[in-house]
Amino acid sequence: MATLSPRIASELAELVYQIREANFAGNYRLATADMIVDSVFDFDLSRGPIHGVSGGFWGLYQKTSGFALVGTGKNTFKSDHVIALRGTHSGQDWLTNGNVGVSVGYNDSTVHAGFNDTFESMKPALERILTPRIRNTGYGTVHCVGHSLGGALATLTAEWVRIRYSRPVKLYTFGAPRAGLNGFAEKSTFGCEKIYRCTHGADPVPKVPLWPFVHAPTNGTEFRLDGGQGISIGAHSMSSLATPGYRNTAKCGDWDALQRSSNSFLNHPVRLKYEDRHQASFTAFWADKISAALITLLKDAGYYHAILAQAGIGTTLTFYDLVARTLEDVAKASVRFAEQTAGLLGHMLVFAGQLAARVVNLTYQFIKWVFDQTTDVLYRAVKQALNRG
Image (cartoon, rainbow, N blue to C red; front, side, top):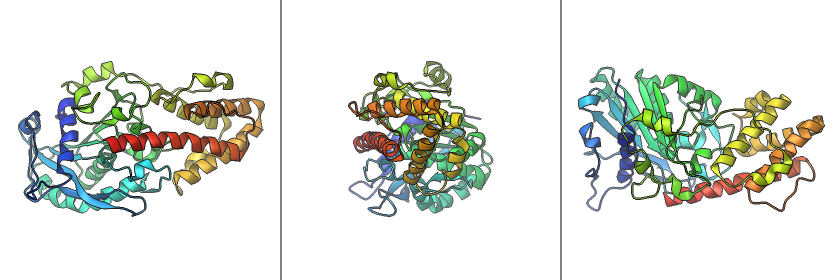
């Protein structure tokens, strides 16, 4: 079963941006002069690309544009197909808003409502193109590829293809956000033949939406393509003209080599001490560590599963309202939990740039304020990264 190389996958993830709009003559053309993707896939754009609706929240400011590119395999990939989905340059996207709605995805699990709406808008066109091709090409693999929002859409598409067509699916994402909650991520992990989740160390977009959204694969496998630190809006770029640029860092032909050079992030308990809070900084490393510390605290206090049970209801604003109320109760339960809660909040404040703020009480109002500061600063960075593209 053939696998797209890192180079081919990254070429496809950038190539699909070319079909956002037609050229001045009203046609769609792909410029592939510096790419090798032409040697393995053919693309028919005589009827244009697959369009989708994006660019707003709860239906506001929506815009229809070219979103997906379907290719038919040849040579090594004969009988295979590829679906490449683009991201967005628009800061009006759902991804930049902390108020994340949820809905039920194709595999009956909870997913990001905005991502799912965009996927649903393009699904009829995908089906019209894929159904006759798949019926005529046996049981080859469908490769789903995407960058940024396109990575989230590729994740939803992969699950739909797997279930709708009973085809083996491989998923390749670059700088993608989390598409769903744990149930969706688990089904995606076990349903896909393989998931290649690629990130840059300083890219803020893979850090959102915040927990309880999680990445697939759920075993934590991640292809970290550079040693970047901090949070940098430029680290999100797909372009080979950017630095680092996912096209540049994924240009090799060997996933095993990339895996050996990747940083490993262990999912181990994290308990933070308040007196150590000034070690924190606004970096991707500390975004991960703070998230792990929150999960550890809720598990230690016995609230983790109860919180997860509420995660599929409403939005993440109401979810974090629930977390804040829960942490108030956790802090009252014992001195140990109060200290652990204060340590978490202290690190969150420093992460958010609130260096002068001190944790003087552990009331719901204060805890919710700390969460608001943390999410606001992170989503601002995400918005800048998406606007820059």
